[in-house]
Length: 551
Image (cartoon, rainbow, N blue to C red; front, side):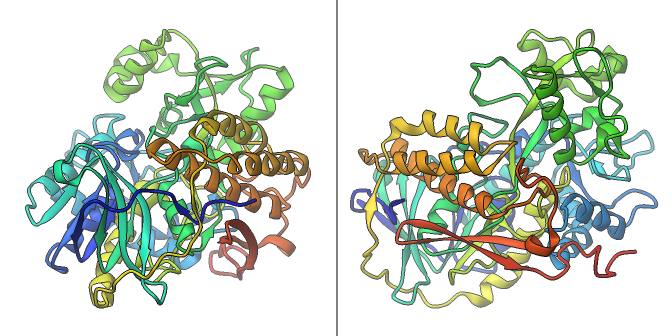
């Protein structure tokens, strides 16, 4: 396989400078920018759409933190490690759960308004894999929208943070020593900054989100095309744990021909008492896991998929009728309106659900302070692999990760800024993949590298992806996005092929058991001469459960 080592794009027609460029405007990116204020001279936030777009606004369930009476970071840690199925970094998880409560309180101080109980305390609920009520939510099921509102308001009130909207990050500019010297962007409708331009900077913080558009059906918005991961890989960064793609178990099934972003039915609905049934009305999660319908997402997604195959049905059902109209309208108004817009009334009808791509637990490999393997390149949020999610993200830990690790980056980055370096001559092979292969590529990934995987399917996927990569196209946003999708798909497929076991959200039909003797660790992928090369890296007691770290 020969993938472009950089994207073919026109010469920059404009340029500017900043100390730090933050790519992305969700909870991770905007938190990083706000925390860096006063610590560096000039911050530039670039976002692919408008400030309010991206995955954060779509988060329904909430943000997890040990804030309730009797709850502790230790208990949150245990739930996170168990869900991560032996692939978490214990130190990263400990940082997440220990610093999480303070980070949420800071978000409240910033202006985020979360739902409260009658006594004025935070209203907390429970989601899959949690043994405590620790999910903070807003507007019932509009938590992400409220967080995004508060963060955007804070950014707009900060005149020292410059924002460029409608900006697609193209590639990093690298100095002679391989460190970050800048980034190229393609901007639409920005006057003098129209088209391809260059930003010279001393550091880049990637907060560009996930890769959901790799698959035909996803809960992710259209902007989630893996741009940050692909850009980092082309610059030489290590990608880690890409095979651990979480498929949310309860995504509203809209029919066999529906593609793109699909409506999510939050796990919080099951947290409030809804349950799964098959076509005969059987509650099939009973006996599958001690938490039944609130088992970790990988367990529920696999159970639904198995039952779909057994009954030869395209979906299962979620029964939430007993919650009642008043409860639905108060607790889940957004989900209720969305379902009704598609002709289903959850108050009186079963909701058709099936797993769909939801979250990338892997991404750009970072240390505990968000540093990637490329000097001057940091990553936070879904684009990053900090080690907290392991093989399966615990519900509502994603927003918390963006908060905590963006705060951590802001603690170390200012002292690590080197002098502004000039970009070296770029000798990487440039190219783009034909934009027209995108739909076929998504079908390949969905069929061969989706919930169920095996060696034959992965081999076919790798061959088909090589064929897509060999089809050159004309440079432009559509081709750049497609190139990024093919690049990440190839890296993901290579990682899934190497990991010959079933662990968390990685399900190999031909290797159906978890194999700690061979695969207790991470799969790292790097691009070498345009080819994704996977390597297994063993980790000692990554879940903390086998080393006496936890009781």
